Image (cartoon, rainbow, N blue to C red):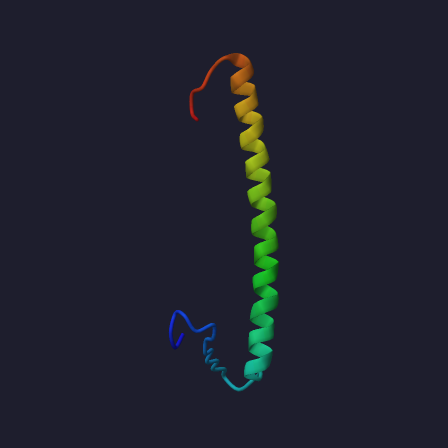
Length: 66
């Protein structure tokens, strides 16, 4: 980034020559989107499990482990 107040950045991509830099960036973006999808699903699953555990503990009158 040239400067924090300038909304611009420079990205340098180096490949081994088997694919173009453009293809490398596109592939990396696709992989990132896939990974973020997995992360979102896992986060939501853990959040919902935590909510269920909290609700069960509240019904039982315990607050251990929170």
